[in-house]
Image (cartoon, rainbow, N blue to C red; front, side, top):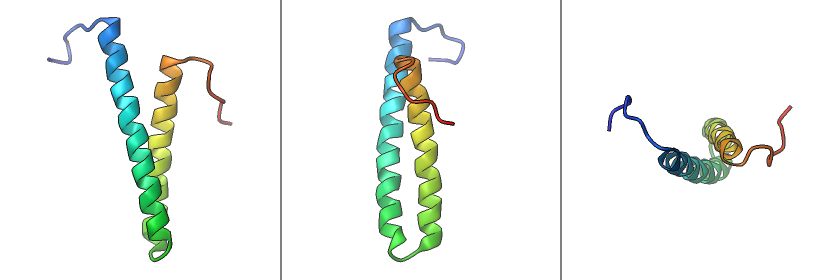
Length: 75
């Protein structure tokens, strides 16, 4: 499949849901890494927290696409 291929709405929704699931897994993974690193390496813990937050934001954006208005607005 190429970037110029047309996809239907069902396929687009499946892709968004896969991306959302990936972001959620990465968010959990980086949270766990950060908790582990917090005991021994504050710098690594900070890096893990930055990555965790990035995946959290991506997940929230994808959630909002799939279920508009169901999530609190960050401010």
